[in-house]
Length: 326
Image (cartoon, rainbow, N blue to C red; front, side, top):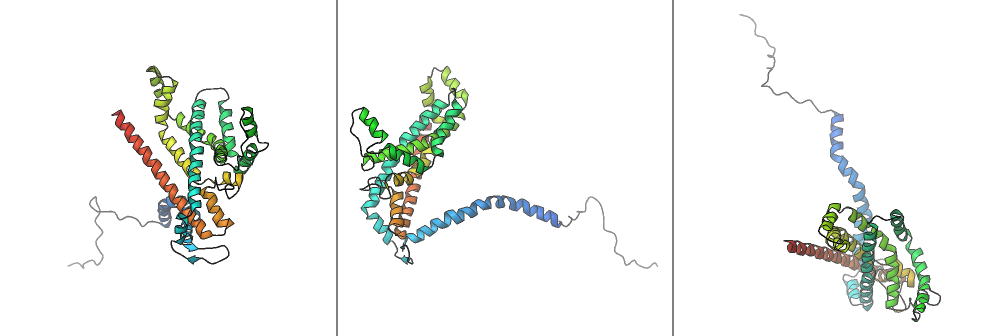
């Protein structure tokens, strides 16, 4: 009888046996980790900057709005006292009304002019590229430079605006100390600076509309005005919504033009003091940082409400248009 072998029999081989996966190397692990972490690493700088310069100041401003915080002193918790002061202050409602008035006077003509200029530049014409670049020059000019130039134009004694009024037999206006005249002057500054910027946005939107739609409309007998109404405007609806929202936000935050035109008080009677000027006056002229933070937060909430209102109106308009087509 032969001695029994103590060695283990060889492992069976064949198609029925599963092959064990090799251990992943350090290089393959690092490569896999890089593939998983790379997208987060690319977007991390934005979120870090947003947290540092966006979210943290917003939360800190909200916390300050519940404090009695004066320059050179420690903050003291007062709860809703700053908000009660704000909503019972006549100057707040004056600044709110001025902000809305200046917003309407500057935004509506600005967007209408921008739409008309973009429509003209959409046609083939000589020097089209020159006019496109020229329209961006006001936007490239600083707020300080443009406002100081227009302050001379709207001067009471030797201003160009009053000289033009005298040519048609009208009396000279005291643009800075007037009520409606001062708001018109500030609105003209805003219109001059931002019309070209919005016109180029509209022009880009017009060039994305298929040319086949215009050709089909022309075959149906539509003239250029009808093509503009029934082809261009429906195709520009998302772009128009974008410019309306951005212009609304800019009008609510209007600050530089009225400040340089007439000072932080917004005229002798605060006739064109905006919410931005009112906040600046409370924070840096009077040193009441808690009240300034309260105005900032109320302005922020107002912007959110206006943006949501514009978006809701645009969606309602889209539903009405789709329903009419059906």
